[in-house]
Structure formats: structure tokens, C-alpha cells
Length: 527
Image 1: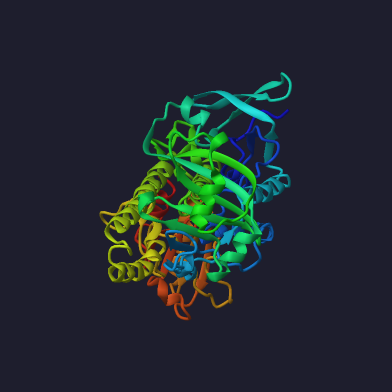
Image 2 (image 1 turned 60 degrees about the vertical axis):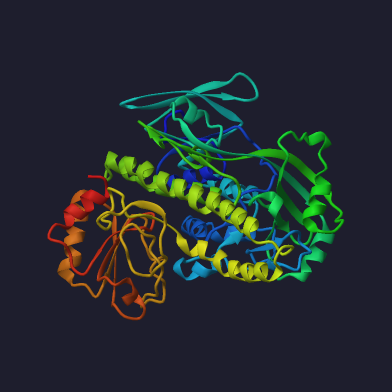
């Protein structure tokens, strides 16, 4: 049994498996320790953003992922909100993530997390640099200046081993043993809400919802819910559903009337064939740090929140894309330790703001709306407010633009901060995701980016490009140069030179090469 790797990953869910794929494709040896040999069939993490599909496309898995969907191709992914129940006269189905589609190179997608995990596991089996130890659990972790070690044990039998590596990443979920062993505390906001999860089949529900435009999620709000939602989500068409709703805290699963609650939210006596029922506690928790020495945490081990808005899994995958290239850079000798420290610096503020401003704030806004407006009290006032509310909902997708303007390894604006808030734009801005524009070759700029750093030279002179190339060669930094003119849509970047790092975020942009191109590269690689 091999016991020495460059990176050990504890937890082989979508975040851990995604990190292993990311690292192995970069030639980094890694081991994944995962107790589950089979996949849970509980649907979660279904709404995948355009950004997440960009990751899968760069891993060569976009086609396989889309083919694993359970929904028909092209089925709308957006949400619908109804007042009172799903048979209400008051409902709206606003635009959603399609509002920001043009700023990304991929469409978003919807499929259960277990389908995604199957795609990642299949890919891992083909990668020589990755070993996946299914049916093993991780135990004690120790580290020193030379490396990190973890004891592992096979679930069946008495076989044990000790793995060693340069770094370890805990992707082992909300109850992370890695986080606990590292002594990392979590800041927690408890909503003090017990929630029901029901998974069921119901062709009848699909038939009754044909009164609406096709959607994948149907939310119900009403005053007594105090801003929390009852919501139905499609798993498959026509009859696969899940349902979340708050329930009294003293509820007992064995005696709880789940069917009655579903019928209340649906607004008619729908028939359901249940496949799963459970309770879960609604809370937000964010780790105080994402790194202790050579040990990192990512995904639910670092941050957890309720399944409102599809932020959890997508943020977890963004964690490992951010961390993955930085680990590879350091292990390959062209990145410095400060680059690894920037992982927590960049990702942690994004998630706090995601939780506070895009989840908790939405619940509070809904509660305030429901307290203020009621059709039973003043129907005209309610209808006017309800109509205005529809146009406001889609704006949250436009405002959610995670960026790293305040990162120490980015040449962001003076006073910039790392934030979940931003404005989608084509302009190349340091700290922001690069939006795709067409190249003369008919490829788009995003898809043409390299696995290392990329310099987009749009009408720039040979001497300016050569300055960056010499600096990169001298430092061993992988640099791909893309030369093109500055017209044909590329003028939208508003820069002649755009330097993009391996996770497709701009780190520097300008009209001319600086006097010290090497200084630019040293900073963005952690020097």
C-alpha cells in the first residue's frame, strides 16, 4: 500500500473528489480517504451555477456532468414563489441566474449531488496521480515543519496505516474531524428552526403545477412562516420531488404528519409516495480559520448554511479551485507560502457575506414584507407591493459576484476588500472573474486560458509581452500568452494587458507593462 503523497484529502464527497481531480490533473499525487463506498441517494446540492460548470468544463467533465442530469435537457432551472400555497392567485417566476449568463462561459445545470459524485469518482479512477481509499476512515493527524501524517483504518477488518504528505485538506463535512483536531472554532448563527426534508414521488403535483411556467423550485411564503420557506424542488420529471419546511422544534419524526404539511403548502390534497423523511437543524456556521500550518479545510468543513439559493456546494467547489492551484504552485516550486495563506484570506469573507447578505438577509426581507403587506387587510396595497417585489428578486443574482479585490496576492484597487458583493462586468478588474469575450480565432478568451497564468495581450507591443515572458521564465512560473487585437469585442476589457491566474481571476490589468514585470509576478505567486 502506498503511504506517501503530496496531498492527503480527508473526505471524498464532491468537494474532496473535486479537489483530487483538480490536483491530479496538475500532476500532484494525492490520496482521498473516504468511508462511503456507495453514494447516498438523498438529493441535495442540485443547483449548480455557471461558475461551477466552468470548473467541470476545465476538468474535461462538462459533457459527462450534463449527461448525468435527471431533468430533461433544457428544462428551466429557476424558481417560483407563491403567497399562501401553490394554488394561490399571487405568484411570480422572476428571472434568475440567466441574468448573468453572458459573463460566464457555461450555462448552469441542475442534478442531484450523488450524480455529480458519480461523475467525479469515475474520473478519479482514470487518474494515475490520485488514489481513492473507499471504506477507510481518518484518525489522528500530526504535523511538523517537514510534513503531515494521518492514521487511517479500514472500516471492515483491523487493517490500519499511516499516510504522510506535504499537506492535508479536510473536506469531511460539517462535523469535520480535521477541523476539530486542528482546534478551529466556528462562528455560528442558529436560526433555532427544525426543518423537514421529505423525498417523494407525485405525478399529481406535476400535473397541478402546469398552471405555472416550468420551474425547478417552487417556494411558498406566508405570514406565519416569518420569512422562512416551504419549498418543493424537482429531482426528476415528472414525479420526483423533495420538500423542505420548518416544523415545531418538539416534533418527532415517527408521529409527524409530513403529508399534511405538504398538502398545506401545495393547497390541495396531493398524493405522495414517500422515499425518505428526516429532520435537520437550520444554521449558518463559518470556521474562524481555513488553515492551521500544513492542514486546510474546505467545503462544509469550513462553512455550512441552509439550502437556500444553492450557495453551499458551489462555494465548496470554489474553495478547492482556489486552493488547488495554490497547493500545486507551492509543490511545483513556483509558488510561495504566502500564496497558501491567501486561501483563507480570500474565501472566508466571501462566505460570511454570502450567509449574512444573501441568505439571512433574504429571510429577514421576506419576513418584513409579510408583516407589512397582507391581501386580507389591503388588497390593492398588497398587489402593488407584490408586483414590485418580483422585479427585485432577480437583482440578488446580479449583486452576487464574489471577488478578491483585497487579496495580498492581487493588485486590487486601493481600499479593496474581499467580498461576495460586486457588479458583473466585462471590464478586466483585478480580483474579479474574467468574463469571456470572442477571440479572432473564434474561440472565447475564457476557454483559451492556460492551466498556469495567462497574459492576454490585446494590441500590446512585443517588448511589453517579452517583459512578462522573461520574468516568468526566470521564476519558473507557467505563463501562456494570448495575442490578439483590441477590437471585435475585446475592447470591453478596457486594457491592453490582462494577467489572469489559474483559477481564472484577474490579478493585474493595464495599458502598458510596468517597469518591474517580475515584481508583478512575485506578488501574485506569494513572493
